Image (cartoon, rainbow, N blue to C red; front, side):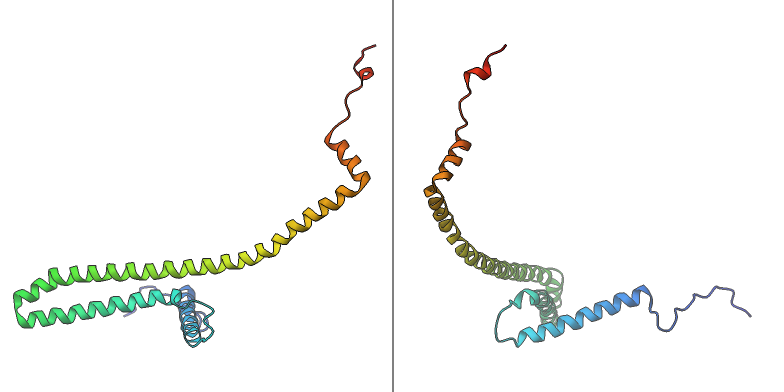
Length: 175
C-alpha cells in the first residue's frame, strides 16, 4: 500500500536551515565565552574585571548546588520520619530555597554594583587627567588677553565695538 501523506522536503546536505544556524551561533558564542573565561582567569595583569562576566554562571551553579543540597536534606528527612520528610518536601525545602536564592541574588547584585562603580570611577579618573591637562589653557588665555590689552590699536578697535558712537543731531532732523 502507498502512503499518501506528503513528505517534507529535506534540506540539502550543506544547508542546516535557520534553526541549525541559531544552534551553531550559540555554540560559537559558548566556545568563545569559555575561551575568554580561561584566558582572563590566568591573566596576571588584572586589567579587566572578570567577575562581571562570571556572575551569571556563579548564580546558576549556586542555585543548582542549593537545589541538590535541599534534595539531599529532603531524603534525609524522609529517612528519619515520613511526616518530617513531607514537611520538608512541601514547606521547609521551598522556603529555605526561596530564602537562600534571594540572599544569593542580593549578594551577587551587590558585587555587580560595586564592580560597576569601580569601572565608572576608573573612567572618571581618566577624565580627571584630561581636565588637569586642559586647566593650563585657561592660564594661557588670560596671558593672551593681557598681551592684547597692551596693543594700542586693539584698545581703539575693542572700545568701538563695546561703546557705539552717540547719534549725531543732524541724523535725526527731518527735511
